[in-house]
Image (cartoon, rainbow, N blue to C red; front, side, top):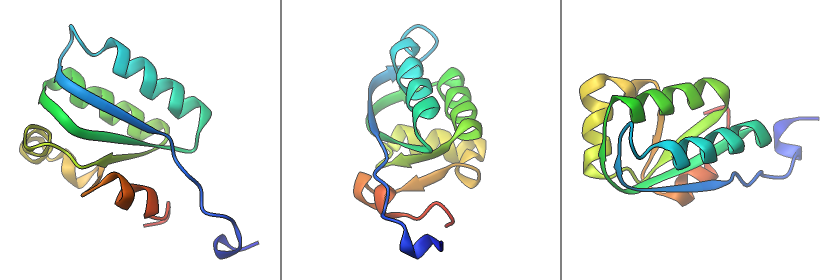
Length: 107
């Protein structure tokens, strides 16, 4: 069966909010890991993230290794973090949750 014959999959969307650092990352980390274990991919809505430190970036890279992680609508702070570290060349970044959902896994 080719990929075109299969029904499009809907990935779970997890919304991140606020400042994400070693002290506040626990709930997001648990949500992302659970989604990665249960699904072939996950969309992270990063539009309301006001700050992310190296522990946040490390979480994104670990989840990326586990599953098809798609970063959707990253805030300015997230875009800057990804750009400065070069992670934007590794992680899949999309302009919106809808775009992330529509993108095929092979792209």
